[in-house]
Length: 110
Image: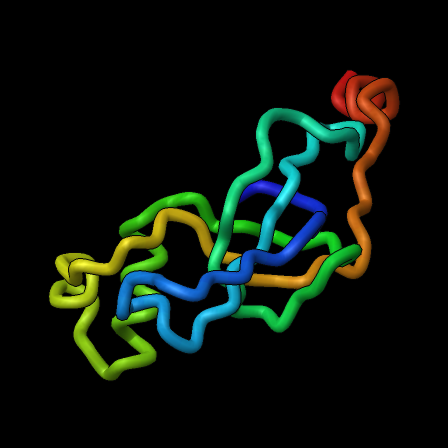
């Protein structure tokens, strides 16, 4: 999972049937300093996020299929084999991130 900022939404007039009723967001991955890192990714929104939110994005197709499959009442073994064209999914809206400074972490181990 990666930390991202939601920077936009995707509007589609024609889409894969599996995406019917799904909201897709443009998510900017962040580095440890919470600065933009890498290219924007598209993610199906399962956390009711919006532009300006900081979110947690699951970036693994199998995990996404498990979430969708379980919502449809499928067993995990069956869910991971579903043909669902999604690799990334917003799974949480982040309120706050607390990180101990590295210098303190090193001192605590000494």
